[in-house]
Length: 294
Image (cartoon, rainbow, N blue to C red; front, side, top):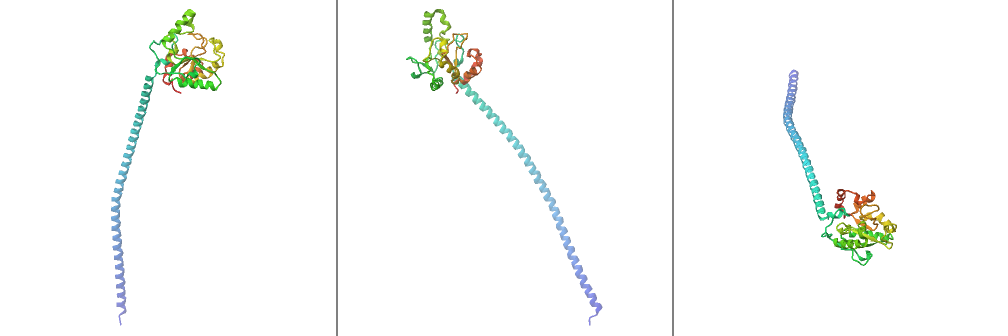
């Protein structure tokens, strides 16, 4: 029979061994976990350094992108400014070319003020359609004025106004012949109603004398016609102005004599109730660039 005391000691030893084995196992496990934690901690420091490095790199790249974006915006603004300047230059060149092709005489003040020599002839005279002419004579006008004149005549026709052209372009020598003939008939008094050659607006090719079935060489009679009233109310819309209104200082009142100066200037004169020859020539010249604009 096994001694109880021996068995008891054996069980104790077995339990002690098991306990020590467990303690050793858990101690080893704890040691390994601590080592792993230390490794992870060391690695985490490396990773943190890497993350900090990447973070700094990202921040640097963001800053560089921001600077590049600012430089790009600055460059785009410079390009935009250059484009605007180029556009302005193109417009300036366009205006210069337009002015170069325009006849500066078209808005000059004649009528005893400025002089057109015997060689002056408008560049593009065109014949007025005979249906708009009151006599059998061929009448001519500046080609750029013709569309405005036709528009005026057609509107007058729609409004029941019988409006025709009695006289349009006259050359220097035609005006000289007219003046000579009238001098013989009226003497020096002719200077009140007929311009000397070189001073007639008709030589510009932009001026017409209108006629109607009610026409009369008597200005006071012509001023009472429906046609004259219609012209006062509508001619400016087509760029025409009355050259010699009542009480002007150049010639007698001529309700039939209308000169093309362009819609912008004609509208200004109409709205402000002003007379062409009252304006300073420099102010008038500002409207030359737009004389043929609708």
